[in-house]
Image (cartoon, rainbow, N blue to C red; front, side, top):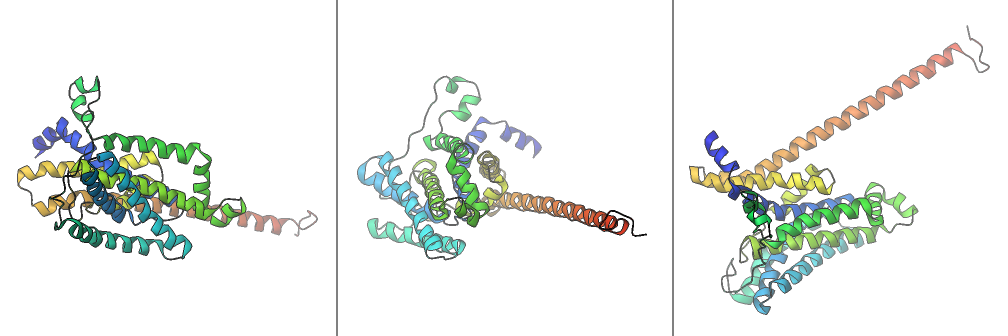
Length: 336
C-alpha cells in the first residue's frame, strides 16, 4: 500500500488531476467566503453551479461558441444569487433555507428544462456542446514533470488561480473590502458609517454568482463535455464547509480546496486496487467534513481559552480594586 501511494504521489498525472479537481471547489469556496464576510451565507452555490452548467451547454450548442456559453452560464448563476438576495435581504427570509430551496429547484429544474428542450433524460447526449479551451503554456510545458502538471490544463483552472488574487485584492486592498468586513462585523455600525449593507451584500452575492458560474460551466464544458443530472455532486455544500476551513481569506481557500482536490484525485487511482466504489466516491467529501470538524473544534477551543483568560483578567482587576477599596478610603487614608 505504501509503495502504491508513493507511486501515486510521485506521478505527474496525479497532480494534474489534483489541480483539475481543485478548481471548481476553489471557485465556489471563494464565492462562499466573500458573502460570509459580508454576513450572508450563500447556500445556493449548488443550484447556481447546476444552472450555469446547463445553460452553458445549451447556449454553446446553440451558438457554436464556448465563450458565449460561459457568459450565459455565469449570468444564470448570478441570477440565482440575486434571487437569494431578494428573498433574504428584501423579504427578510432565512438565507440558509432559501439557499437550500434554490438548490432543490436547481436539482429538479435543470433535469426538467433539459428534457423539455431536448428530450434527453439526465444527460445532454443530443446537444453538440462545446468545450472551453485547454492551454499549453510556452516554456513551462517543456519543463520535465512540472510541465505535465501545470501546462495543458483547462482555461478555468488558471482563471480560478487568478480569482484568488482578485478576491484577495478586493478584500484587503480596496475600499469595498473594508465595507464588506464592516457589514459582516456589525450592520448597525456600518449604517452609522454611511455604508449601505444591502448594496454591499448584493455586491458580494454578484461576485459569488460569477465564481459559482465559472465553476459550473467548467464542470460541463471542461471537466466533462456535457451536462448530467446532479453534475455539481454536492460541491456547493462542500464549498460552504471549506469556507470555514479557509478562515475567511482567499489564500486560505486554496488550502481548504486542496483537501478536496487531493482526495478526489486519489479516489481516481484507488479504483485500481479494488476498493468499494461507494467508499471511493464518498472519500473526498468525508475528508473535507473531517477537516471542517477539526478546524471548528480547534477554533472553538481557542475562543474558549481566550474567554477564560479574559474572565481571569477581569476577576484579577476586580480583586485588586476591592483590595484597594479596603485599604484606602476616599481621602486616601487607611480605614484601619
